Amino acid sequence: MSYPAQGLKERFWGLVPNGDAVALRTLLERMPPQAAAEAFEELDEGNQAKLLKTLNSDDFERLLPHLPAPLADVILQHFPQSVQAEALEEMWDDDLADFLQEVSDEDRDRYINLLDEETKETAEELLRYPETVAGGRMTTAFARVRSEMTIAEAIAMLAEKKEETEILARIYVVDEQQRILGKLRLRDLTFNPATLRITDVMQPETVTIDAMDDQEEAANMMLKYDLMTLPVVDGEQRLLGVITHDDAMEILQEESTEDLERQSGISGHQEETDYLETPVFSHFRRRFLWVLGLALLAIVSGYVICSYESVLDGWFLLALYMPMVVAAGGNTGAQAATTVIRAMSLGEFEPREFLGAIWKELRIGLLMGLLLGGCVALLTPVVMMALPETSATGQVLKTSDLALIVACSLTAQVTTSTVLGAALPILARALKLDPAVVASPAITTVVDVTGLIIYFGLAKWILGI
Image 1 (cartoon, rainbow, N blue to C red):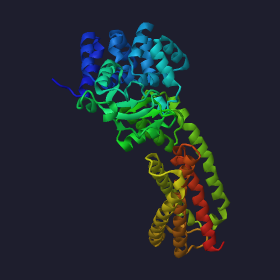
Image 2: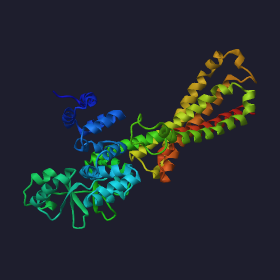
Image 3: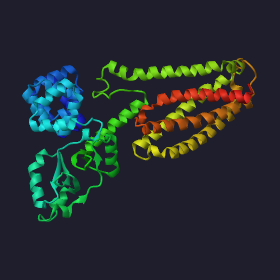
Image 4: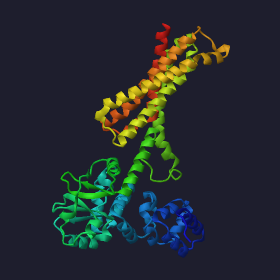
């Protein structure tokens, strides 16, 4: 009987308390390694420890690349060093590099010293690159052939290397200096005469990425050009490795999560472990400094209100629309920032096109501001009639004056907030900063201050105070 992945996971969880090694091993062999890793990760610590005693290292070997590094580290340390070395050497080199980047410096050195010379050399080469650049996400286990080979010679060489190659769907052609010349599909080799030269059937490869370029740029290139693999080269166009499509999907997921967290005012390193498994203090540490900084910045809003105390005392009805004007700016500023960050992430425009983007957002903001201001102004008489008589303290404020103040304030606030929300991420990118650090809470706090200044400034001018 066939079970979906979720059904297999539930059967797995049901078998763990019984400690039936044979049944567990049989079920694990049927499960995709990703689902098996997820099922193990979702067990509580007690059942995880029980399973480690029930099964052996061979059972966990295929799970390790799909587990968060802290949990994979716990599993490895449960077994002897000889077994640890064997499990690490069985990983693809990019998975091994990812794992070694995540563990502590002490554990990293210990694990590297367990590896055989060839694996150790490959791991150290990959670890030279930060994990956020293309070189840090590439694998060196890819297929390559020499340009002067015949198809028969190339197939023979690939057959010898097939167990060491992570992906054979794309085969790259290099010269004696390992410079990339072109690419092949496996069918280009199998459906052409064996005596043909590789140069006769290869296609030129025009899309490559430098090893030190950002990983997000690599993933976006793969998405844009619909690539299964992306060649990673050095400054002399020597082929160092490739980024595979599964790594590109992982990069995009990580970058989307990071951007979302930063736009929400969450800083620091993204946790490998799940939300519920991450310690409370880790969440606290990543959120508190942003909250504190924005709270201090919000004091400026209070200062602005205090400086216009005489206006509020004399025309208390102005307080009625103050929260709305401020909130409208925060909402439109956050919308503009999100739109611009997304467009830049997808490569739809560059910082050098700053003026074009600002001009576009200026027109959008002005249209929204005029429409919003006009609608609220038209509703002002209805709002005034609905107010209780006790609200009319201070000097009498004409309905027409209040409507004009609100309409002008909303138009100015929405326009300036939209422009600010668009400009700040673009300026951040131009300064080689992450646009996502100009988070929505920060933009909201800034436009709160500008909104209050606009609102009270226009009120003073219109009322002739």
